[in-house]
Length: 372
Figure 1 (tube, helix red, strand yellow):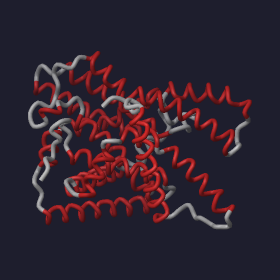
Figure 2 (figure 1 turned 90 degrees about the horizontal axis):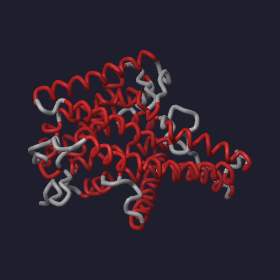
Figure 3 (figure 1 turned 120 degrees about the vertical axis):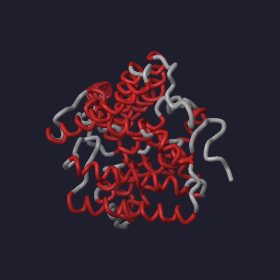
């Protein structure tokens, strides 16, 4: 049986499987207009922040020992985060704006060519401001996650670096950051959606410190769980329990509506945290149960390419929905672009196209999706 830790990169398979599940959930949410949108977006993004905290500044060669690189300087971490998060954000943001404008001028025809300069300037300013709550961020809305995670990791690093000389002090600071994120989330919930629209999605970043720091604080425990031997019977039980948790989320959102991390639409703190907690736990159950299997290997592959999928999947979704609107009609065929079966099939096609394009681009331009 193969090792659960890649001996070259130090990556843990179950974590990559969890990332694969989370990015699949995000794509599924973005192709949906109803139940799947509400079900996935209540937990998928929160799961990514938790997984980011779990692996933040971690020595990959010592995953069972030292979990915080004490010799990492601010300049080094800033350079690393800039290459990993902001370079792909800027690169694919500019590409997305160009595609978005061309799409609106020459494909759907809802923009005059003479309006291109103003549209270009407005959207580039939106790229710089980096908040998806602003009007000029329609060109590739999923990219909000990158500047937001940049802020989260910079804040986390600054406080943890200051407190790293004393282990007990660093633990206290980490817990305070997590509770501070929870407190800010409570404030956002009371203020209402859209009350704060700060550069680099900072208002969302401060709230997501809760999930990020949770992953960092409990990283040793979670990693031990990810590396445990799990018998087949227990794996089956975990899949069943995970499916029940997702079903509970579906019942919740049918009755009360969905919650969204990005727009700070929590519909009540207890409601949001319950949905996010159920979804994250289900994701972890699935990842532990599927690791080492055929399906787990495929999800692990997807999980290693989350950056490419994040920045690219908007394009096949946008063009796919447009083509499904005009091509079948021209052939005299009616295609109903809604419902769970259609959305599942559409999401699978989008994922396959995105992975193919990501592989081609990476082959020719290895750094197109940031440094590893």
